Length: 376
Length: 82
Image (cartoon, rainbow over all chains, first blue to last red):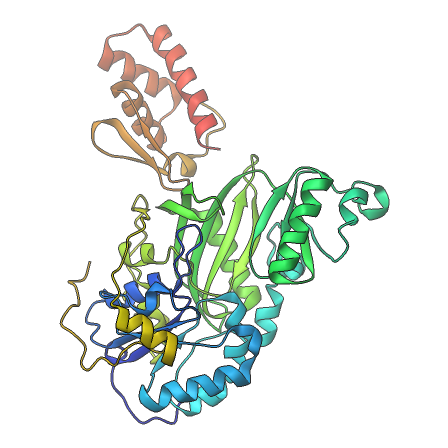
């Protein structure tokens, strides 16, 4: 895939990581991905944050990064992204990029061949695979995989919420879940609340807005890698124990749920996914698992994978270098290992902020510092 | 003691001092000594009469009392291990 003849091990690569925003109520996964790589056994490479805002902490992180660059927002398209990446690559050859936000995947998929020619590795699904896990296509995917999922419908008229309980509209029942195509989901209990959330989501993320039947239950999540053959590589499972107001995990515990694992294996066989993904599922009172979302990236809680001996970002780089899945150093599941997230300030010199604001990049750093921690 | 799936029972991993962790749900429980013994025996697949006999012998209780307690314990397990 790459024309670069460089055979340095992945532990010496320079890796770009996106999604390095980290607002406590809804952090991007990038900082956790960077931390996994930073603490991976033997890693001596560089980790470069690729952010979208001057205040993205992953651009400046003193322990888990070596500086960073701003990218154009995904809505500007693949050409603008390539133009910016060319500027970055001219000064900082990247060996790999780990895209970590849903909305940027189409652009990176479009650029994958060109970036591969320049020696930048990425492990991504194809366009069709990405599309097949879109929220409005989950019923078709789940039918193929033999997994339950709530019915879902794209809508563009908020008047739907006043009519939706009628037989003509399908006899929906409140509460419902109103969702954006990429982000945000709200449980709504009546037409007025639904219409309000519809407007909020449409303004933030555009149309269509999705409505999904609500399933009452306990959320369990699985993250893993796909190698494109349909195999589920390195699954790590977690139950959320504490949530932010946006429903993101603030604390969670590693579990070993054979039903979740089996569902994950069936979904992966149906998807033949390449790269990282996260399955969000709900277990109802009867014990049935319902697929809520398939996220095409690592989750923000991926640091738990390192804690349970299955450092998935490190495994991703190893796969990209050609290590076979069976040869990855993955520990057996360690249920009970718990994470508790916390917010912490990092101090950034004014010169760094000015540099990012004016030049779109942090100040040049010369050599990797000897800050790498001992591995877990 | 019917209707409890043995594999599901084995999801409860016993630690020290009666701590039990359900690897499937991530929930933790604390068992008293009689509950701990009962769970160990159930996880071994022992029939009800053996569980009652062992508990009655270990804790010096009348088998009828133990049987009632064991039935209640199993009812709790069914609720907590769906």
